[in-house]
Image 1 (tube, one colour):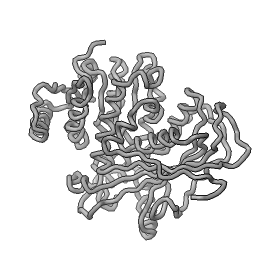
Image 2 (spheres, rainbow, N blue to C red):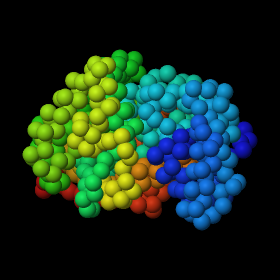
Image 3 (spheres, rainbow, N blue to C red):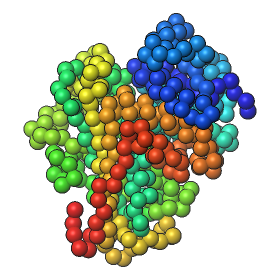
Image 4 (cartoon, rainbow, N blue to C red):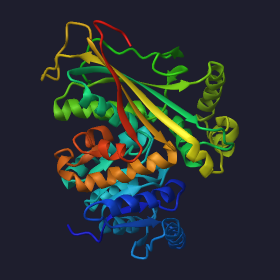
Length: 433
């Protein structure tokens, strides 16, 4: 089907969308042949202003870049947007409120879709409701293509590629830090909105999973234990605590896809966040309990949304992070895996000896939330339409790890400052990390 343009960025005038625009332009121009793209959103005036602002930043005329007016509350406008492009990059969240109409329009018009959602309920509900229709339409719908959860999910794929044998389990340790202290919020307010409403509807996620994952995966030994208490690790400086974000659920979905559709043994996964000081742990525990409790009630949610700075310890605010804050932020994901040197073709094979090999990898990026995220989603979209033959054999609603496992997305990211490396490999029979 002939389309007017290759890619369209929806939600282009939002905080994240604005930062995707120059990156998308750069990557689209460097592709052979160059890709065409456009911007979309509710306000034509704001879109025109954004295009002019971007022209000044990059020093190139963008007069040929289409401006498309589309609104999640206006289905015909979304359909018209989807008709014009081969793929839609959706940067308009929270996705639980604004994501589904865009997904639906894209599938109906046979247009591929990627987004930067970090909302497990949205991602899994879209898979439950639309995966079969997407398969029939030959459409790839891939959520979580930002810092949630490309580094973790593709980090696992990277370790799988490098590990000569069978990986049994991976512990993931996430760290963030600033190169220098800069005052102000770390994340945009929309992310706080998503988190608050996600906590409020946590019970609903269980019902979705019961339907979506009706068939349980086999239990493989040795079973990876989830450590719920704060603990030390030799792999990072600080204290590891369970990470409440989307990464674990996204990686587990990928591993289920690998098992059910590619007949590969699924890797067990646990995800932790590193806190530099033990003194922050009781503060975090108390504030988390307060937020979780308030999120269960309407008035409590109103308070959380009205006073993000106070309830998040300054991580969020109604004002957006400054560019100085963004540019000073750093991020790394350390992945430690154990398995066996001896590989087997049988996905259900149970080893009768302990793991005998370890591997450690690392994914690193600067400005993770609003720099690396933009790189990840732009390259994800471009990969879908330039390496379609390397994508899963049929359309569907997928996670990034499974969708991009056979593509060059990891290499593309590595060339653009989202780096992947092997830190070490060890024989567990002779040494321990």
